[in-house]
Structure formats: C-alpha cells, structure tokens
Length: 381
Length: 244
Ligand SMILES: Nc1ncnc2c1ncn2[C@@H]1O[C@H](COP(=O)(O)OP(=O)(O)O)[C@@H](O)[C@H]1O
Ligand SMILES: [Mg+2]
Image (cartoon, rainbow over all chains, first blue to last red; front, side):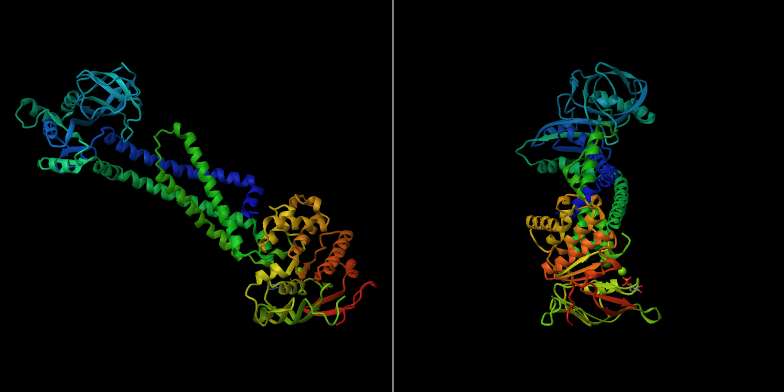
C-alpha cells in the first residue's frame, strides 16, 4: 500500500489542479529550452545547410557568420587546386531590406555559384536557380509565392521566385534567400557606401567588385580535413575552419548574449517553480499533520513519513513536467518561434525538475518531522 | 482473573511528570503507582487537567516521565531514563492505542487503515489485508471494509480504530475516552468488546473515561486528582476484584 499514492488519489481534484498550474510553469521552462534549441539550430542552420567540410575565410576572422570576412573572388580557384579539396564554391552573405507584398521585410541573402557547393540544400516547391541572373529561391517565411517578382537593391531589379524552402531562417528569424553570386555581388556593390562606390567606379582603387565572403570546400573522404585546413592557412590572407570549428564557434559566439538572457529567465522561472512547489508541498503536509501524528503514534518510522512527502513531491514534479511537455507540443505549431528540443536539454530540464522537487520537499519534511505524535491525541478532530 | 502469581503487563512505579521549570512548573503526575494484569480492564477517571492523558502518554512511551520506573510486558523500559532505544518499535509491537476520535487516515479505506500497522510491523501485503479483514469482521464492521473513514458512522469508525489498535496483537491497549463520541448504548457495546479482547488476547487495557454509565464495565477504577492517583472499589457485582 503506497500512502503517497493513496493520499493523492483521495485528493485527486486538488492534485490535478495543482499539476495543471505547475505544468504551465514547467511548460514555459521547457518552451524556453526549445527556443534556445531553435536559436542554436537556426544559427547553425546556414553553416550546416552549406554542407561544408572547410570554410575558407579572411585571415584572423571568425567568418563568415560570426564576423564579416572579405576575400578576393578568385580565392575559389586557389582553394580548389589544394590537395584534398574535391569541390569548392564561393559564397556571399548579406542582409537586405526589401518591400515584399507592400511591407518591408529583412532577407538574409546568400549568393552562390550555380552547380558549386553553397547553394540551397532542400527545395520544397519549385526548382533550383538555373539562369545566371534575377532568379531567387526563398524561405516560405518570407510569404512569397512561386513566380512572384520582387525588387531587390537600389536599382530595384526584379527577381523571380523560382523555388521555396522551409525552415531556412537566421537566428534573428529572417528568412534566407539564395541568388547567384554575380547578382549578389552586384547588389553588394549597389549598397556599398557612395564614397567606396565612387572610388570603385573610377577604377582607381585596388578593391574590385569581385569580392566574396567565404569559400566552401568539400574535402575528399581520404584526406583529413585538418590537414587541408593547415595547407590552406599557409596563405597569409586566408584562414580555414573545419565545419566542427565553425559550429562550435557559432553556438558559442553568436548566441552567447541570447543564451545569457535566457539563462536569467530560466533561473528565475526555476526559482519561482521551486518556491511554488515548496509551498504546495508545505500546505499538503500541513493538511496531513494529524495523519502524520497518528502514523507516528502507531509506530511509523520517520522514513515512512519522509517517503510519503518526497514521493508526493516527485509525482507532482514528474506529472507536471510531462503535462508541461504535452502542452508545449500541443501548442508548438502556434508558437511564433521554431522550437527545437535536443534530448540533452530535455533531460536537463527533467533533472532540474526532480532536484527542485527534492529541494522543495525540505520545508514539508522539516514540518512533518517536527510533528509531535501526541497531537494525535488532541481532542479537536 | 488477575492473580498474585501473575506478572503485571503494565507496571508504573513512583512515576512523576512535570512540565516547565521554576514558577511555571506544572506537576502533571505525582508519584503514580499502578499495576495492570493480563485480562484486566481498568478505568482512569478524573477531572479535566488531572493528568489522565499525560499518564497514558507516559505508558505509551510518547512522553518521557520525569522520574520513576515503567515496566511493559515484563521489560523495564524506563528507569529514570529510557532503557529501550527503539520506542517506536515498542509502540508498534506492544501497544495498541484507541484515540478519543478514531483518527483514521482519511485517505485509506477501513481495511487499509488496519493493514497499515501490520505493514509497518513488517507483515506482507496479502497477509496484512486478510488479517485486517478478519479483525474488521471480529469487530462486526467487515461489511464496511471498503468504506473511507468519512463514509463511516461514528460507531463504525471507532470499531475500525479498535481493529487497528488490535492488529499487532498488543499486550497493552490504551484508550483515551474511546466512548466519548458514542451514545451510551454503543459505548456499552464498545466496552464489552474491550473486555472480550482483554480476555481473548490476554491483554491489559487502560481506558480513560468520563462516562459514569459504563463504570460497571471495569475491573478497577482509578481516579486522578491533581496528578495523584486514588484507587476506588470496583463497581458491578459480576466483576471480581484483582488481588493486590
Ligand atoms: N505539553 C504540555 N506542556 C505543559 N503542560 C502540559 C502539557 N501537557 C499537559 N500539561 C498539563 O498537565 C496537566 C495534565 O494534563 P492532561 O494530562 O492533558 O490532563 P487530562 O487528560 O486529565 O485532561 C494539565 O495541567 C496540563 O495543563
Ligand atoms: Mg485528556
């Protein structure tokens, strides 16, 4: 006979209501984990979508996402001639503001070389870019339809939407769009500061229009990527990062700030939940003082009584956790941000919940252990 | 029934108990001497505040006497200090307690309220349940075994509480005004039951009461006055007094 279970069953309505309230709180904690998971996933998405083995960027930068990187357009030829590199593609990255369907939208624009690494990884509707100019593949989040024409850049060239992608957004939530490298370079030139443009137009300066942000390299499976990276870094103006380095760097650097904010909210929520659980457990114990006194009187050991309280605290926590999880999954499609759950963070929240419940029981346990068995004799009953 | 050659189940010798110190000191029990023999049912009477509950608590090893000697079932448990380490276990095995209010656990049904003490004593689940049902039947509340305490009448609840007190076959049964919430007819039934139990289980029963109507149910009646105990001749012709 399990006393904790029997008591819960006896007060089922209260237990259910309490759990409902607590599951909302824990649901928010779980949701924030999901938002955080989504942020990491988004931040890594572009780096992952490129399916690169190596990123060749400007020397001493953490490009192309965490820091800006500019390298000459002919770097790709240089890279592709290095031993071990199977394929290489030049890419540019820029954020643009565009009038889409009459409202301003930010797009994260990726320029790539047709047929080379760096293009869209998955197209859910339409097709890839085939013509070298004025075609665009864009994420569904931009709200554009296939065949729609959108003006980009100061000269307002119309780009035709030929393909749509799904879940290709930046960590800021901006939809990603792909255009050809040439188009991208032209746009970049157009939006460059007037002084630079004047300089470049005069043809006087060293800088040319032919600049890229990175080269994506795919390495032969028979050659270690590290070795190729070392070889590439011999050029003084280049740095080569492996995909693993790139991902670590992005999750560390790019979302460091976001993580701090969320950790703060998370810690606050956990404290609030712990206080609430502690109060619930405490009142549940208060209500049972007479039963506890009776149990002690008839000879129940302290371990029975501590067990009763801990089991109730844990069932409260675990049931609320599962209910919170269910709520999050039910409402996930309606949530404005993408929620990504990796098993590790889900487990961490679970462990936090369990620890929280154990900590919260302390108050109730102290009360229960202080109950004088003689209280069972008190005449008011 | 109780004879000279028999050993007392409960033996209280020169037990005193006070609360507080200095000016605030209350002498709740003063030099109490009391022996209860197997099969005896003794009554404890006295005005409110005279020390009845305090005396029961000392015998039940719930509160510690200030001085004196307490022997339970042949074992000295207190002699100016506790001599037994595990009073809880002692209570579980040797003492059955019937409270003024049934004090059943509200979240357990009648059977489990009885079975819980058997489980605490280490009896298996099935054995506990069958003994609990057996006890409930012995107390004529077997038909109510699945009822929760709030669904039981006062008399039924008190019988379940008595069944619980009897569960571990204690040699000592202490009752603090067990008949207070019952009408006089039911009170009489409960008292007859206690008497039967005392004989069946060869137990000693000490019962606090205010009820003058049931005085004929006791072998002895002790009166407490301001913490001092007087013995009073037992009432009722059918009871033979225990030799002392
Ligand atoms: N825990 C306690 N602390 C201080 N005084 C107490 C305590 N318990 C009982 N007393 C005092 O001891 C005396 C006897 O009380 P009690 O045994 O409860 O009497 P009864 O049960 O006969 O009404 C009373 O004066 C009471 O105030
Ligand atoms: Mg009393």
